[in-house]
Image (cartoon, rainbow, N blue to C red):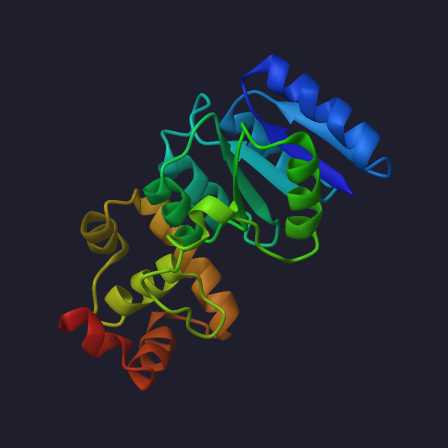
Length: 208
């Protein structure tokens, strides 16, 4: 299993490297210290089975960077880590499409097990936070809750810029979401996507 860690704290990176060597010996860990480096690595020829991103490292701007990563690399399972976490942060990570949220205070054995669960297609949230992480929006046709929001607004005729303004997203992030929506719904353009949204009643939801 190839794992990418994006974290600017050398001590944690070193500790995770040792943990993976001991607990998941067949895996390899690549460490970068900022979001741009993480995106360069994820865009490389060799595919990563799991990406782990620190919520507060350089370039992330909190969840903005996490969301951009999820939109640009939707095929790579993503786990968010943080030195501390509130229930709201854990819920937000799951709503955006992250496969897990790992406080750095978790016991090493728990972290190792959680990484294997996430890389295998599962979702991990610490027990203390699990009851707070039910997404507010249902997924539609395999879309994440955020992609569903974007699709609903697209169906009302809003431009990418207008969608970004409504959801407080950068336009480039909206474009990435729209691209993923087209791929998942197997549509070729905004008209076909809007028709699909209309058939699901999302346009009425957005106007409500």
